[in-house]
Length: 127
Image 1 (tube, one colour):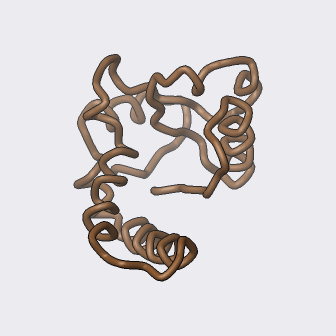
Image 2 (image 1 turned 90 degrees about the vertical axis):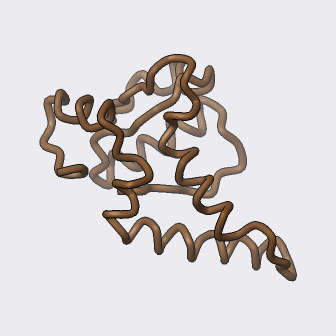
């Protein structure tokens, strides 16, 4: 599953509020890189499990793989406004999010599947 939100910044407090909202909507786990903003007191009470990617391995960040795919679909075109480009990105994100097989190809690494399998919650994302 792909979740996204347009946010003004990626501070720890902003990320914590996003995770809290996602948890309320049924998200039980996210794959998380080890960026400093992803840790701190703000997210201590958020009930969404965090699966941290291996240290020093930005190439394994599933979000970056999705961003790379989106850039290949969006960049190199002329948009009349920032809102028009944002709308194009939104359309592409919705399409890729709806394609479970594409998401598996982009983000379904063994380490993620193994980490999900170890969580004490039911998970059908990569089954």
